[in-house]
Image 1 (cartoon, rainbow, N blue to C red):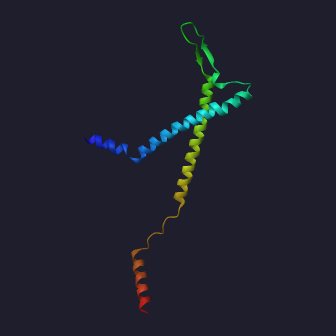
Image 2: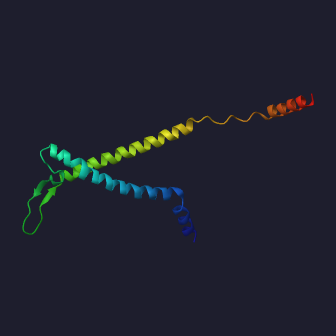
Image 3: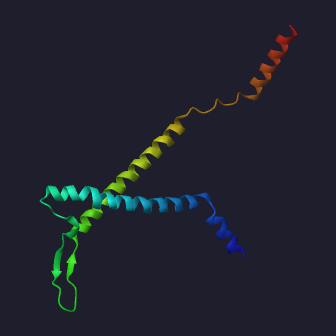
Length: 134
């Protein structure tokens, strides 16, 4: 029974939930970036390079036969994935940079003035009492 309770405590901690949300959003973001690269960025680049479709750039290693398919290195897909990675890495960099900036600003906030020593507080109270009597 102890292990189940320990797992429950682990599973409902804020960090685990935050991590799960981050993974889900990251997956969706990856899909958007893949579409951006494949459907928006690469077609104009291919057009500039003479109508090249990057997803079709392959290096044949073994020709197809009647019984087997051709074996190829898919260089175009690799290039698309590199561009996708660079876009995601840049977005993560900007996110971390922004978070670090906010954290730095929070640390730069002036700390509250330290409490005066107990003797000073007592002397201030005595002074105020003497002023009130006069």
